[in-house]
Image (cartoon, rainbow, N blue to C red; front, side, top):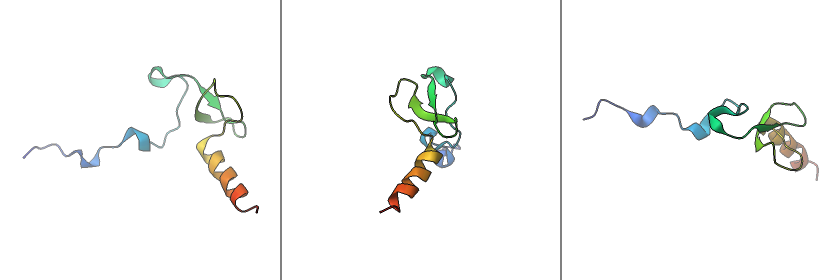
Length: 66
């Protein structure tokens, strides 16, 4: 049996740290229009860009306003 146990390996998709600038050769990320934190969208994205936290809060507000 192998000594390595991959069951505790963290999936990069589940990381909690926000993307930062041009890390790992990626594109520069747009700033959130509400809190100025980095978003998951490149700077070239048109329209309003929100970070995951602000997107969640906006979804809560609009879901209950009916």
